[in-house]
Length: 535
Image (spheres, helix red, strand yellow):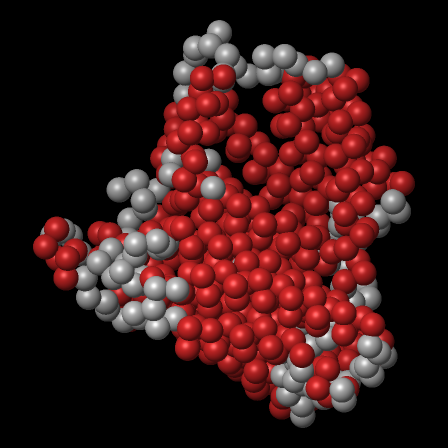
C-alpha cells in the first residue's frame, strides 16, 4: 500500500463515527445501542491497526500532510478511542427508555468524531473546522433536555463563549499564515524552532497569535470568569458531563502543547496564562470545598484542574501538562459515571467514621504535628528532586509538598494513626512515583524549550498562589467560626458572584427565551436562574 494511503489510515476513526451517527442512528431504530457498542469495539481495532502501521511500517516524515503522525497525537487518539468505548457502553443502560435516544447517540458520535479530527489535524483550517464542529455538536448534547431552563441558559452562555474562542483562534491562524505563508502546522512550528535556535525574536504577528491562542485556551478550559456554563451544564445527561469534563475541555491544554514552540516564546502569552489560570486555580479550588452536590463539586474541580494544567504549561512543565491531561480525563470520566453511587458512598463513610469527636469543627492538629508533616514532605521532595536532577520550576514540587503534608496530617489524626517511620516511607514512595511519571512522559513531547527556572518570577508567583491556597484551606477547615472566615465562606459559596456579571452581560448581548414548560412553573427571569446552584 502506498505511503500516502498509510498516512491517512487514522481518518477511518472519525469517518466511522460520522457514518454510524448519520446512517446507523435512525429515529425509529431499536438497535442503536447495540450498533454503538460494536462501533466502539471497531474503533479499538482501527486504532490498533493504525498504531501497528505507524510504528512497524517506516514512513518518511512529511510536513505537508493534512494529518499529524506524532507520539502526542497518537496518545490523544488512544484517549479518544478509550473514552468512546467507555461512554458508548455506559450509555447503553443509562439512556435506555429515553424518547430521543437515537438523536443522543448521533450527536455523541459526531462530537467524538470532531475531537478525533481535531487532534489529528496538521492543517490550520482543518484544526479550526474540527474545533468548530466540536462546539456545535456538543451544543446539541447540552440541550438534550430542552425543558430545563438552567441547562438551556448554560448551553446558551457556552455557545456565545465558544464563538468568541473560535473567532480568536481564526484570527490567530490567519496571522500565522500571513507570517509563515503556510497552513501546515508542522511547517510553521519548524520555522519557529529554527528562529529560536538562531536567536531571532518573534514578529508582532507571532506574538499576537500566541496571545490569542492562549486566550482561546483559557476560554476552552472554562477559566474564571468564563466558567459559569461548566458549572450549570451538569443538568445534561451524565455521559455528556463525562465527555465534556474528561475529553472536550482538555483540548485547551492539547492546543497549547501543539503550539509550544510559538506560545513558549511569547512572554505576554505566558504571563496571561500565569495570572488568569493561577487565580482561577486558587478561586475554583476554594469554591469547590463549599459545594454539596457531587456533580457541581466535580465541575468546580475541573475548572481548578484545568487552571493548574495551564499554569504548568506557563511554567514550562510540559510533561506535567500531558500527565495531568491524561490522569484528569480518566479520573473525571470515572467520577461522573460513578456519581450515582455518591449517596451509598456517603452513608458507608458515615457509618464507618469514628464517633468520639462530636464537635462541630474538626480539632486543629498541634503545631508540632504540622511542623513534622511539613518537614517530612519537604525533605522527600528535595531529596527526590535532587536525585532526579530536576532544575525546572520548584512551585509544583512545593504544591506536592503541601498536599503531602495535609495527607500526612490525615494519617496521623485518623482512628489508627500510622507511625512516623511508616509515614516517611510512604511519603518518599509517593514522591518517587511522581518524579518517575514526570520523567517517563518526556518521550511524547518535543525537545525542551521555554522552561522556567526555579525561584524565577513566574515560579515565585505560582508558589505564592499555592501557599495562599494552603493557608486559606486550613482556615476554612479548622477556623470556620472566625467572623472573617465565615464571611469568606459565604462569598465562596456564592461563587465569588463572577458568573452573575457574565450572565447578565451575555443576556444583554444575546437574549434567550425560556422553555415553554419552564414558563408555566417559574415566574423568575433567566437572570435569576443564573445564580449559583444553591439558590
